[in-house]
Length: 163
Image 1 (cartoon, one colour):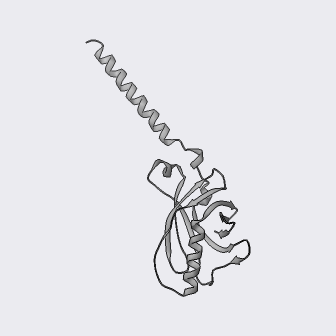
Image 2 (spheres, helix red, strand yellow):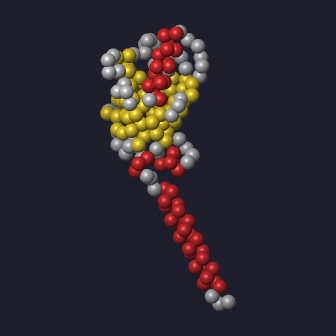
Image 3 (tube, one colour):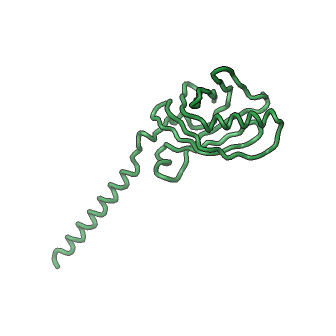
């Protein structure tokens, strides 16, 4: 019975060591999911470039924009791989999620399906909105230089955004 306090202290020490190890592992960031902080924030669409033409929004009075922000929740989201994306196009507001697989200012990008409001507007504007959202959902890669964000699709379309 004299060893009971020693055994109890050993068990407490082992438990604290396990807790410390688990906590330190949770705080470690997986480099595959670490993304440059420069992607966060609001970006305004300047134009879309396709292999054979350049497309701009059919109006200058309304800005088309998107914004990336950190998501909370799962450990993957907390380490920086998954972000929320939201924005406003000519008629509607949209939101969804994005995953960046890069530790730099360039890399792969996946934007999940985007939910959108269903407000009505001029046919030219709603047509542009559909086109823009389809391109965002086909995003494959991105790069950031200075205050410019480029998003490319798998079909070589490019969306050019500025701060």
